[in-house]
Image 1: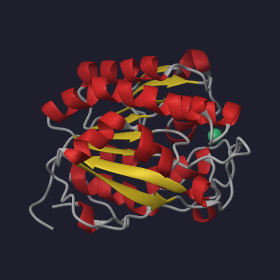
Image 2: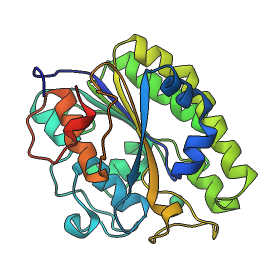
Image 3: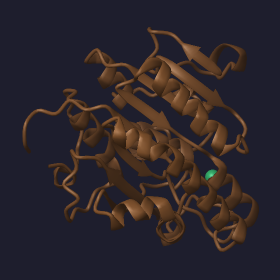
Length: 271
Ligand SMILES: [Zn+2]
């Protein structure tokens, strides 16, 4: 490890994006790799390969079995240290444009749309939030929400979490034009914002909670459910060979932010 880092960081979780489809359909994101500005890693998600357990895994570095967030309807606050709580303890500013389960895990639960959909509350772990609660909330609007939060509040850590790829997979399955085309469409949205974020000096990670299967679901051990992409973009990354685990993401985020933590991390990802 080099010098103590203190970066602004954006984490994008593309809900339900399988590794192979991400690699094949994310044309702009892959262009950054071909230009030597990014690198794609394959990550195997923890089990069960379901959303809420793996949001908690990505954001705390703790597996579902250990965190107790073992299925999608465990509706309680996280009882782990998260990238949000560690960033706040270090005086950093946090924001998220994300599905409402993220608000339930780290801010308030149960979800109260009128209270929580637009959150501006310095006392919450996610201080500035725009949360949505339908799976077909358009990704293009979600990216707009995230960019609004970034420009308005200048967060140190911003979570960006669109849902349309997962929604397409549940409607049409992994091997479908709808799933692949939704992925291509989300990549176009990213191509609108990634250049601005790179220009502004952010360190950016793009990953998925879990993949998708041909039964229009996920939850088990099939490679198409478990293999997810991790792209890293920014000058703090080594872009060298590495084998990151999903449980390494939280510690890697904290390391980039310069926030003290006791989480596992993948040092090879960083310069
Ligand atoms: Zn899903």
